[in-house]
Length: 324
Image: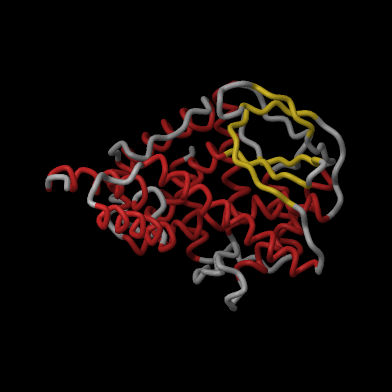
């Protein structure tokens, strides 16, 4: 058996990696189960990298549950696969392969989206003191520069103001996690929509693989009109996921119906574009996708999305402050 100090150090590592990074019930249950297996063996602490692999499988399950809802909604089987990769710049895209349709997602951007979800929710609920908002803003700007513009991963194990804030209110961290998963669900639903709506046409994109090599793959290039169509389908699928109340879908845990999340996501994209313009001194062009705010307006025109929801307004105000 390890001595008490070694056990406490190992436990601290697990808490930093899992309870802070993804403080949802499923992740904690996974961590607790693996920890209990180690306690029974009495040999050594769990291998963090091995647990991370298990967690990745768990997270991929979120995608396949969303596909399950899409199949039920459209009444047909969908041969769709999922892969998280590091891209040259933020994107969620897809390719058609001989063995099915593959959705590629930039996991570096998802890290940023997770951090921003936490900061915005905690600020909206008044947990971040007025005196520390500028410190938090500096942290957010540094993370955006490192993660979004320089394409570097964020180390969740390092102590920082983000981790400190999360520890103040576990239930609020859970709400922030729902917002993050709502953003994530809509992004994935949009890409699934391109497949369901048969938007597949040829294109090429460079992908940075895990080993650091750059590969070229065929992806879908789509018209702006088709992006609006995929947004519409994506919102219907997102709504179906959030409103699933039976046990047929494992991830139907959205007790907070954050139906305004896609609007906030487009506003977040717009803030990032404005930050890019200030950084490069060049305007952002919209040749392959519509302007983010136009996409938000198009959704609002078709679906009863309550942009005036007090929580939505408070989160949007926080977004404006931290991303200006």
